[in-house]
Length: 103
Image 1: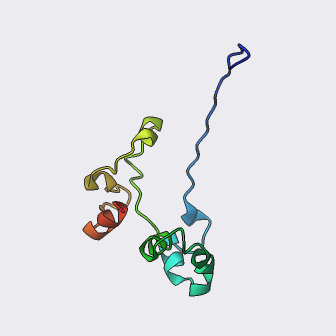
Image 2: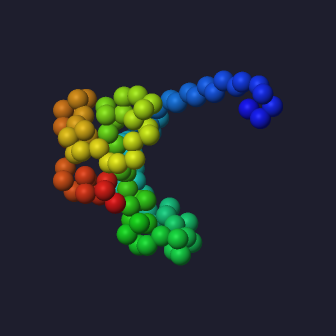
């Protein structure tokens, strides 16, 4: 630091599976909520386009198994579609999901 002392930075990152704490998958919960739940997004109309607001109302895809270390957090480009393959579900994301991830 500025005062000559050396500091130690400790970072802890913990990922939790929301499915363990919710009555259904996040995707189903988001699709099932009423219009009133998103009324605060309407207050930010000047900040977001309608397309962007629609994206905020959806569960997005995430390359869970690709994110296998802290160095991956620094990657600024979207990984290739095949990196979204899930061994747990034995499936990859569809073309539409990958296209949506690019936005």
